[in-house]
Image (cartoon, rainbow, N blue to C red; front, side):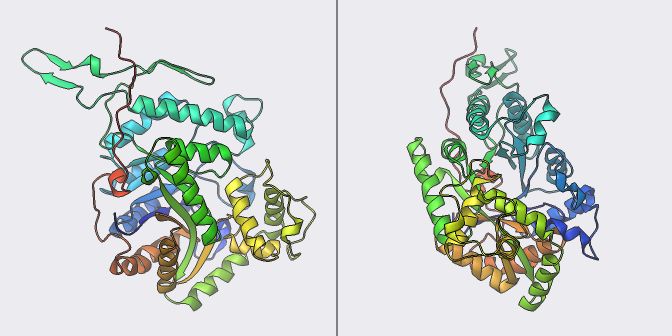
Length: 444
């Protein structure tokens, strides 16, 4: 596979969450299916590999100042897939607040319905408020969530593999439809789950839906190395990105997989316009909307610093940081990425928030189409990733600008596909078709 893959995030109003306050913005766009279908068609016209939507199973406190995650992504992206022919859909689902059998069945069904364009983004959920929505008295701690996630994915992948490729007989003369010896139970009994299997439907066009994963803690890294097809990550420096990619590839090899069996998709928040001047003007408009005091408190907590230890304009040096990433950090990956910036020289919380795209923690890339294309090419050439998940600063504007202004430049340089290279998302990412796994046969 030449060049790199590209995914587009549909997070609305954008990865600057206060973008809804701009004069031209629709505060209810995140609930408008026509809006999302229009963006999906723009993405497909640009030959984007897939669209992505983050999600969480609880309403977060930030609803007072910005829209929440919105429509359930399985429903929303299912409707997006229905009006497109090639665009992949990456749907976020929690292993902490789902059962493996139901998730395996839903995504296998989606893979059939989309003809091989389905991907699940596995998260363990970092929001404690979710627990009360599912009858739990408390949110499981991180180590437990990742231990559950490992068993969850072990069960899901075995369920997806529970039908052998040659299960079908369809002999009309004898009336024998399927060879039951080719359809297998998994009879799983583990710490968290008891699942007999098999699934009631044969695998879809991809064999398995694509598994996407994000997480920089040790539990997340193990999950990535053992199961993930694509790892979504964050990095503020090329050196950190290269080191992360090498680590994941080594972990995959240690798990008995080929190093190329897992692809790294680097998240980048993009604000792009026809000229740099226009982009910088829009950047300042978004900066002016940031709730800097609240974001400073959140940033300090993610770095393991007391909430009142630094003001928005007080420099933080590497000597001020704890020796290790705090166990209570909302995102280990974001914390590591931010610490890497501080290691280059003292930064104020305001600077870190701005460089981290308004508090998202991802690298902010601002400029003209040519500048954005140059930057992505530079990071790809440095070996930082196999592709990028583009996270529009203001989705209604930056998704279309990226698709219509930046993508043609990348295509002319041979860095991105001019047409869809294969019908399934798995094939376009250059991922192997899943190998058969030995499982227990169904009883006679």
